Amino acid sequence: MLRSALATFAVVLSTNATAAPASLSSTLDLANVQMVDSSTKADQWSVWIDDEYTIQRGVSYSPVFDFGARPAHVSAVKAELFVNRGATCNAAIYSIDLVTNPNQRLFDRYYPNREGVVELPDAQIYQAVVVVEQSAFMTSRCVLKVSGLAADGGTDPTDPSEDFELAGALSYEGGFRSRIELDVNPEQKIAQFMVRIPEFCAGVEVLEAGTISEGFFDAARLVDAAKSLYEVNGGAGSRATSVALAMNGPAGAVCDIPVYVKYAD
Image (cartoon, rainbow, N blue to C red):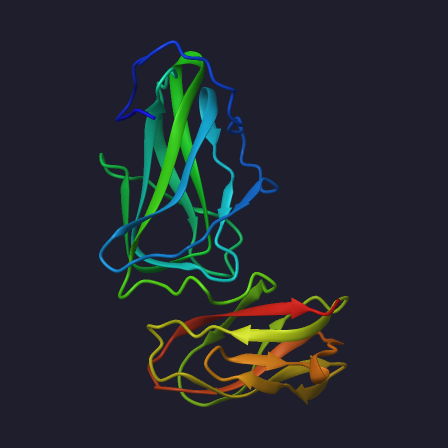
């Protein structure tokens, strides 16, 4: 497969025909989600997305690239367009839209430099959408490549499990906190939950964790200290209105701490 890197347009390399790839959407489609492995290596660009798409004239949106239970810890994100042999691509990267906080409800828009790079010192990426524009043809076929540059030492590709989903984040603001709560869906039984203290929140620790139902606190059992993994009601699960933590840490620490939950079958 021959590729040619693109700035704002590409040329036809041959006339070989291939099956039409999926089309990018003309609007942001939050239901079109593609899970992404956020694994990164220190001091290297790690490729998350490398897929071909059909791009219509005008502005188009990629799927929502979702990093699931393990956000990408990066210092930069890069989006590039390439062309496969036999295709024509005449498009450019307009923006990279990111969710960098688990409580964030709207994407923040970042405009990359000429190399397609957005610098994000010590950022956590939960979701990303790449916005592309092209005006020369009714359709183009481009390969979208999205990469991340690891912050610190990279990330562990094995943790946590895909069985967990992000419930939200607790806002911790230093010192001893006897009770910090995160609202959860009371219609589903929580079997386990995992507390993911970011690496930059050095010295912050969980003293006690549990769930709250009808105003009463029920302590959860710590089953894996390395993962801050807690079990609810012996793993059978229970319905709760919130997850609650008692925490301690440096007085000046300010952290958003993601919490992931696994629901009972």
